[in-house]
Image (cartoon, rainbow, N blue to C red; front, side, top):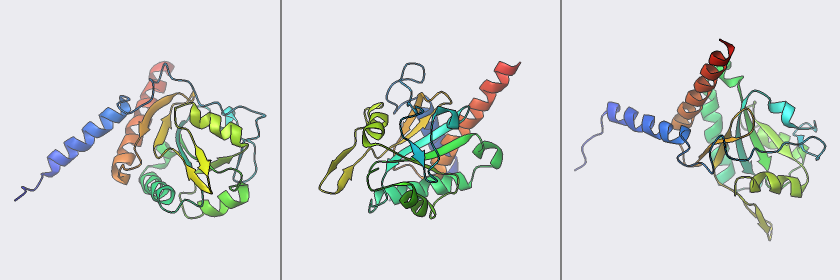
Length: 202
C-alpha cells in the first residue's frame, strides 16, 4: 500500500521541476547561445485582428509561445486551457510582463478571423500570430521544432517555448505540465527578470 506523500514533499518536487525548467534542463540551446525567434517586420505576420506583428510588439517582455491550429482535436485546446488556467493565477503586475502567443501551425486555414473566434474560449491576453507558411515554418525551425502537414493533418511541436525579452529561448516546457506548475514556472521566470532589471537600474 502506498504511503501518502506529504504536502512538503510535493512542494519540494514542484520546486525542483521549476528549477530544472528555468535552468534549461529541457531547453534546446542556452539562453545566451540559442538563436532568437525572428519576428521580422515586413514578412507578413499578423495577429488575430489583422495588425502587423514584429519584434517591437514584444520588446521588454517574456513570451510563452505555442504552435497550434484551430482544427486540432485535443492537444491544442488542452494545452491552451492549461496556459489559460496558469495565467488566471498571475497578478496583473506579472501578467503585464508576459505575452502568451499562439503561432498558427496551419496558417492557410487559420487566418485572423478564424483565430479570433477560436481564442474566445481562452485567456484574453493570448496573441495569435499567422502569416505565410514559409515564415511560420522558419519560426518553428529556429528551435528544431518542425511542422509537417499531410492529408489535412498538422504535426506540430507539442511543447511550449518560454522566450526572454530578446527572443532567445529560456526553456522548452512539456505540454504535459500542470497549470499550477506552469504558473510557478512563469512566476519564477518573471520574478528573476524583474530582479535583473532592478540590478541594471542600480
